[in-house]
Length: 128
Image (cartoon, rainbow, N blue to C red; front, side, top):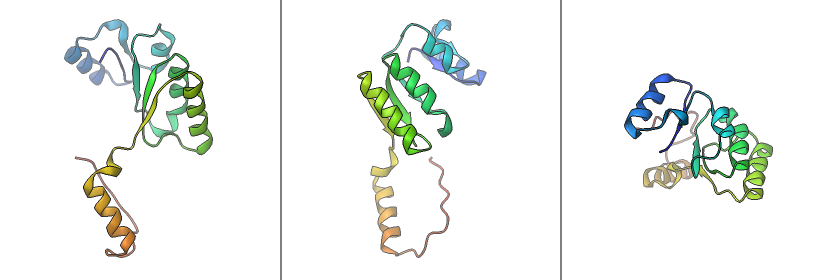
């Protein structure tokens, strides 16, 4: 880890101490980070869903590889634009859909698809 962006001071201070980060790579907003000369190979974008597109495109244009938290964006057009900009700039793009291949998640989907648990009307899940 070489930098952190977070609007909250506690995470910024925690990551600064835990990873001995330079003050020049700690930001309250992503925009100053992308305006700075490139200082990392990749970024993780974990903003709220509706705020994925703008930083993803900006960092891709600077040549940063991107791990984008799910969902990629709020509509297909934004997803397509993010992918296009990443391709144009030779940037690797990955989306964090990590849970779908967990055995428990596969089993839950099988149970839902088979009708074994009836009609699903609501699911609330918090990751441990």
